[in-house]
Figure 1 (cartoon, helix red, strand yellow):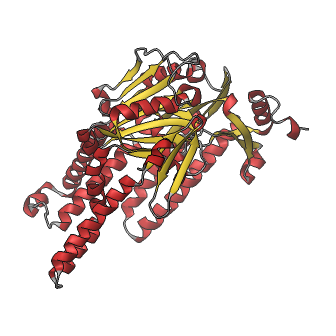
Figure 2 (cartoon, one colour):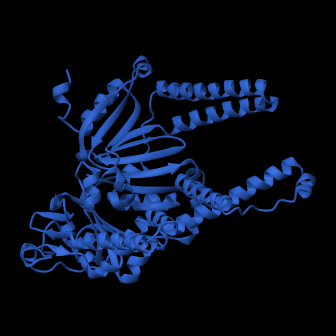
Amino acid sequence: MDVYDQLLGWQRLDRRMLLVQPVREVGRFLPALIGVALFGRSAEGGGLWGIFGVVVPVALGLMRYATTGYRITESRVEVRHGLVSKRVVAAPLDRVRTVDLTASPIHRLLGLVTLRIGTGQAGDKNEERLALDGLAGPAAAELRTRLLQGSVSAAEPDGSPVADEQPEVALRLDLGWVRFAPLTTSGIVIAGAALGVIAQSFRSLEILPSVDLDRAERLGAFALIVLVVLGILVTFCVLAVVGYLLTNFGFVLTRRRDDDTWHLRRGLLTTRETTLDHARISGVSIGEPLGLRLARGGRLSAIVTGLSKKQQGSAVLVPPAPRAEVDRVAVAVLGISGPVADPLVRHHDRARRRRWTRALLGAGLVSVALLLLAYAASWWLAALVPVALLVGAGLAHDRWRALGHALVDGYLVSRSGSLNRRREVLHTSSVIGWTFTSTYPQRRAGLVDLTATTAGGRQRVTVLDVEEGLSCELANEATPGLLEPFLA
């Protein structure tokens, strides 16, 4: 970086990234390098091709380091990339919502971190480019403070330094919570993906477990199926627990009162630190998937204003944990207990009939398909028809019990779902608009879906199947004056 850039305040990444970027580029070009190596065996001058295949990625890594720079002015943060086509991505400091510090094992070995800046920009592409991969740990921590304070100087208006108060620990991971890992959808996905990779590796390497057919025949088909199912379940549980620990080991959630921020740290091999400005948190979302709910567990995420869908993982406040801990942290974040603990308003009986109709219609279609398969293939499939009807009835009843809403202490509360139940709490000051949606069956029943539009989290909080007249009253009470131009 030349003297002119230094005068303008441009800074480079840490020099230790010169050890990381070339290796990373070689990894990205690994398939091409394998092709070059195979080609070199059958062509003259293969050694030159191999050298060329390594030199190019290393050169790209060095250029990536040399052409990346950043600077912070009084009003914005800028990140610069590119050699031939130079690109500068900028964001106002007052739009900074979150700052993530991530360190892979090689980064931790060199004392480096990757800093990602979450802003309220509409494009996820721009969000991804506001990342500085390769800052020294202390420099990244200082930069995080400056970004979240919205100014270059981390000082009070009178020029005095900010008091360094001891952070309050709001939550610390209990290793006993790994029992919730197999009960989450993410745990099942992680375990399934890992199991698929292991099975594919065995097949590729032609490593197959030996099976004693005579012994299997003596056990019987039913016993063999039971053993296989138990083995798969045990494998799934172990892999889910490993994934839970890799992601959440060392999870600590703290709050600093001096700069009013929430800070969380987690990760075993790759550590991740996230800092959230409390002023940007407009609500919380309590997730209760069916498995966690049966085990009296849950998880908690913050609804952060302007956070893109790609960065929702940055807003995790409580991993799968006991529901009591989830509620306690939710109350601590909101400052009041009403939106978390108060009972919700039950919906009209027409909403209950709608849930039963939809659930039993789906169960009926499954039952018809099972009967057709039983007629065409095997009669025992007909025994699953009562099971399908019972499952449909159970889902209908559970979805009806979950359905509810409330307006408590300036917060809109909505709860719905069965397999993935969610209780969302949104401050009414963050509502920027309302959407009323009604399908033909809903119109016949006099029901609508009321959606509060916001710039945080999933961009909306929806109250399902509420009465038409009540929906207008609820929206007008939550945001007085916002709907007046549209009301007769």
